[in-house]
Image 1 (cartoon, rainbow, N blue to C red):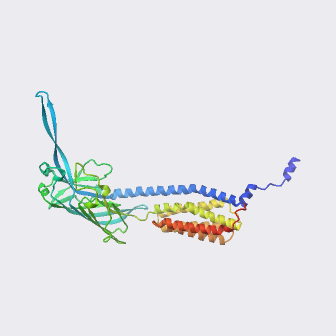
Image 2: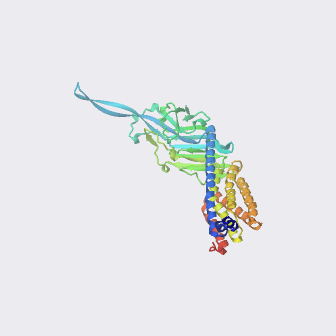
Image 3: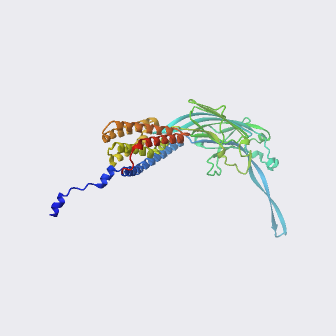
Length: 458
């Protein structure tokens, strides 16, 4: 009899399911949870972008190591040995007297030139390995200037203690493997070859040192001129350290996207940048730099005072993809909000699984964007990925919402949102301003549309 009663008892309604369907609060909770869940795959997308960006850096380093690395020029510098003396007293037990002994020590003075004029002609191009690009160049440098007659009396060094016949010229630089010409320096008509010189290179310098044989000591008694030419195969950047009391540099290249780097900017009046290349001039006076013309005992590391040009590859697809992915939470949140408002106003039921499918489609936009941008430019990849996702969600919405009006509205809204984000990631100085104004407008629209919703109903 009990079994008969149980069989005749009508099924009790699923109160929780009914609450989910009818309660606005319940739908808001479910949508919020789904957004949090979708942050997990969105995080993996960001990790994927970082991994691909690191891969790009590795490939660029590989390209550069084969062609030639960045170029930094430090010199020429005159290296002049001199004698110093120390006197010691030793007590002699036999004579019961102190014996004075004078020891001679060899030290070095490093003297910078009075003028340094550098003319740099750079032929640049892009090299590719797979989908990755690096900017490389061949630079022809002409350097000339003069040294004043050597006078170390200001450093309390007697002229008789200077070893004039042991003077040499130094030249420090990066990228020895990229040098394509014999390294010579002309001093008043006499040529002196440079040879690689081992020295205690600290980790902050990264410069290799070249040194000549002993130069004609008669040169040092009066003012003399110097000149040298060097051709490099290099990549990324060229920098010059302003060792001249007056340092000038002129650089001309066919690269249309230069980035001027270092402590000193080129002359605005003579600088020109066109689609065919650029030309820039620098002038640095001794008063502009915090170091002197003569150093004793050790040549300082002056890398931080270098200036020059970085040959920029502007199309950094991974950086743009990363900036785009940062707005992933905003895109998912606003899209779900749009569906939530349509569901609430039209009384159409949308299952949490359908929200999840829409969210995954939005996440797939970023994987499509990254993969396509590796084989095409960013704009084309963005258009293809965006169009694919918008069409997919619009068609899927039609099956959910059972009419054409709401899906078209969703498609247009997503198109506007992706266009808005594309504009933001292209901006640098105004990205925050445009983003803030755009979000304010979106908030105003949401407030206007939701004003008729009875939030007290559930």
